[in-house]
Length: 66
Image (cartoon, rainbow, N blue to C red; front, side, top):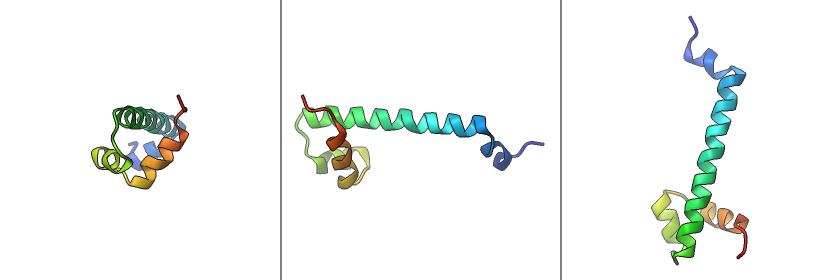
């Protein structure tokens, strides 16, 4: 029978996993953008999203400048 470790090695699983990670990253980036626009500091955003301040600052640098 197909076990979890064998499933995780399939191309379909790996592609689905990567797509899920990309979607989560996009959602996180959108959340950072919204929280930044409403005036939260990077420290406050990090706390709200369970991230480090460095991770928030890296995402903020990638946001388009309005």
